[in-house]
Image 1 (cartoon, helix red, strand yellow):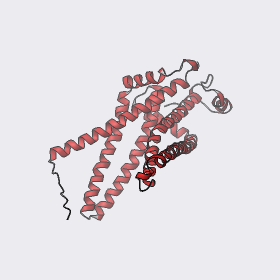
Image 2: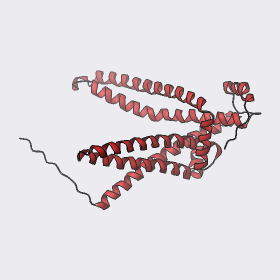
Image 3: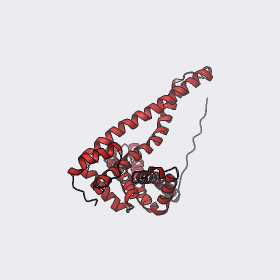
Image 4: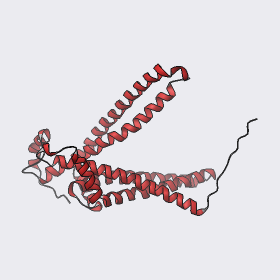
Length: 271
């Protein structure tokens, strides 16, 4: 018969603690990189929006925005990513406790831990949402993280209906874009598989599904750039509408909308 050898590793307390520390560093580093990217995009969009001579904007704008974020706003990115990393680490600890409760067949503990996992999952989603908007506020007004969170919260509260409508529309457009990119890549890959290695495979369904999932995952990263840009334009538009009622920076349809509706509104307090 076939003999299978299984090896188990026993780690002491120090190694386990080092593993949790490295996991926390991974969470913090990944979220910090995302924060720097989001703020760089927001700063480049804000600079484009609040520049009347658009010809001055070029590819160097993004590079200069990244330099400014790293030099001036890295603390804001680190603080926001730290909060998210702490919640992610707590969720990882709860997930391990859930696995232990399942192995011990402790249903009560499993239910309690499941509720805690759901609560911290919602907390992580809220932190990601408010942090993204806070990064945009920091990119526009160069404020600290806590002040940017407060400004972002009141901005969302003042324009809840408008932001909700644009968020739903932009989410639908982004999903369509992701599906379109994934479908094109999958169809092209399917054609290459059928033409070149079809005889070596029992079925092309498996590789095709894997390619679709990977392409959708990659396209999600690219479409996140448009998501942040859309949100940044919305923040810039609201700031333009509330602060520059006489000489607004908006052009085209945005300027027409503000001219028709902005006069009816009093300038709002940005705090």
